[in-house]
Length: 221
Image 1 (cartoon, rainbow, N blue to C red):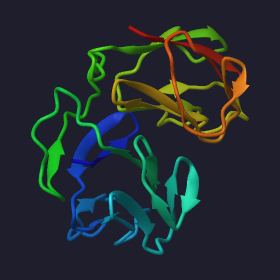
Image 2 (cartoon, rainbow, N blue to C red; image 1 turned 45 degrees about the vertical axis):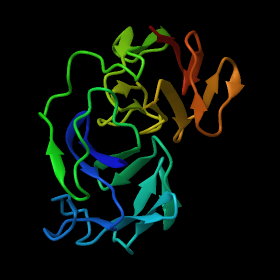
Image 3 (tube, helix red, strand yellow; image 1 turned 60 degrees about the vertical axis):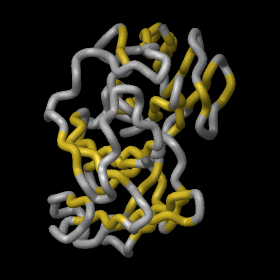
């Protein structure tokens, strides 16, 4: 069943299944997905099914709803979309993975520990994604892709932190998708193997990613 994974920074807070009934997102306690933050409107947005697809709609919120770093009024969701509501992130996924529990009913939460797991989360084939820093400064030399979505940017919410005053807050996002990973530009200049990327692209082991002055080598093992 499709679901939204609620995150704050690098912490996965909860997840909420998306079913046939519309799911409202907001600060008030009667929402299906409650985000208790003053920057979130009482009824901020909703997700509903339309045929075989799921649609995200902003409910005229004060601070807006963003998908992949772009403001939206209405957006048809696809695997790996990153929704920003104030300082919280919602990741849309239709893949539960082999280790996922039985799906929850729409609007029912499954709570996670506040700390991101230290071991990598395998894809459906049990493979693990890593990024090696080839050039540029991010504070580390290698990253294991432990989250459903890994943000790259200078924001304090980014798992891979870019250094520099003029770096974008969120430059790109890498998402687990079925048996592998995809990358999506979100505000920075992004190339894969020297070719500019303007939309979501599947990653292959050995791909060389250049994003906002940092070069990374992707490996799937």
